[in-house]
Amino acid sequence: MKPRLFSLVSLVMAVGMLVLLAGAPLAQAGREIPVLVNPVQPSDVGAVTTYTVYLPFVTKTCGSTGETYGTINMIPPVADHPDYLHADLNIDLRGYQTTSNTPLGLKAITGPTDANAPQLKTLFSPNRVPTFVQNYQVGNWNWCGSGGACPDGSNPGTFVTNPPVTLSGFSVSTSEKIYIPTSGYQIGANPVYNVAVLYATSKQITFIYTAQDTVASGYAIHIDKICVDPSLLALYQSTNAAGRDYLPALRHGQAIGYPLGSEIVVSIVDRGGFQDPRSCKDWWKSNWNGSTSSPVCF
Image 1 (cartoon, helix red, strand yellow):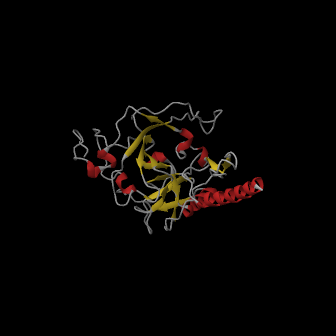
Image 2: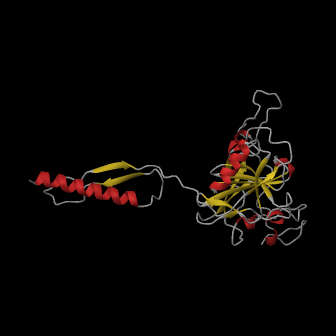
Image 3: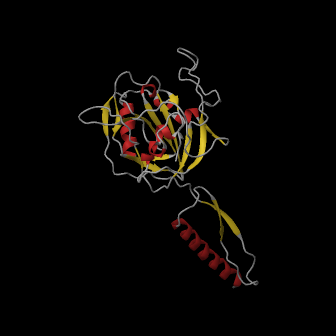
C-alpha cells in the first residue's frame, strides 16, 4: 500500500503547487522555475524527485493613461522612407551602446542656449531631475545616397562620439506616467498643440516640436523602453497607414505611457543633430546658474 499512497500524495501536492505558482506574479518572465513535486518525506517513502516546469512568457500589457489625443495636419512633404525603416524616426535601427567613461548626472556645457528648449524635468510628475543610471552613444547611419543599393540606408556599426553622450538612461518606476516635456513652442491653432508624434511602437516613441514630418525641422525627442498608451499607438498607426498627412498631436503635460522597467532611455535632437541630454543650460534650466560662459549645474 505504501507505493500507491505515495503516488497519490505526490500527484495531489504537485497539482497544488502548480496552481499556486500560476496565481503568483513572476519576477522574471519566461524564467525556468524548478518545482519540488515531492516534499521531504520519511525515509521509508522514497527519494525526492524534482522537475523543471516551463511557464509561459509574460508580456507587459500597456495600460491606458486616460488621455485623449488629437491629430494635426502636417506641413508637406511627408517622411521619405517607411517609418520603421527611417533611422531618424526609429532609433532601434541605429541602435546604441553604453559608455562607461562619461559622468552620470547633469553636465555644465558652455555655449549658447535656447530659452524655449524642451525641459526634461517635466517628463515626470512631480517634476524632477531623475537619477541617471547609464549613458549611451547612438549609432551612426549611412543613408547610401539617392538611388543607391540601400535606398533606406544601412547601419555602419559605428557610433556618434561628438557629443560623447547622446542618450541617457533615467531611473523610473513602472507605475509612474511619462509626459510630454514642456517647451516654449506651439504648433497649430484652434486647437493649439505642442508636439507631433513622428513614430511610435509598443516600446518607443519619437515626437517633434514642429508640424513638419522630419527631425531636421526643430527639436525632437526619442524615448525608448516606454510602454506607449494603446490609444496613442493605435492613432499613430492609423494616421501613418493613411499617408501621414495627419499625425497625432499632443500638448505639454499630456501623458504618453508608462516605463517598461526601471529605466527609460531618452535622446534629444536639434535640427537633425543628436545633443547631450545631460546639459543643464539646455534641458534642465532650473538646475543651471544662468551663465553660458561659466555654467554650473546644481
